[in-house]
Image (tube, rainbow, N blue to C red):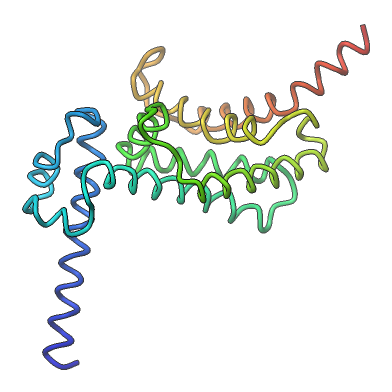
Length: 214
């Protein structure tokens, strides 16, 4: 490797390191200070970069935070897509997806808090192409569940998304807030979340069966 190539590689590594710090700072400050309190100056200061450096990558704070939300959603959809390629039941989709959220909560709790705050913020929305991807994946999950008899035929894509994605995120954040229980997340919590999701997805069918027997 000549000196010019070496310098180019080092510059790229430095840029990647700085960009990673910027993203981490934006996530943490958005969680602790809210979107309004996470100014560009504060993000740059926490990331230990010049504010001007941040503008090399993003037009402003909204673009930065939106990109981080999109990045997080891509991680979630990637997890669903990966499991769908080799699973034979809806439980085999739900189990690793819930595990993904619990692992993320353990390794990067700010990221789970971050996505929780933004999915409840009307200023932000999922990118159209990501939304189409999510709808497609939820359709595949619903179809698999119907074929296996694990999901009632009346369940729609948005309800699959609500139970399989939103509920685990909500559960984890309620535990983080210690609203009902002051205890760290446990394996029994993960198992309970899985069972509650599965029960909800087949609940409509169970109600029909119980009503028919009365």
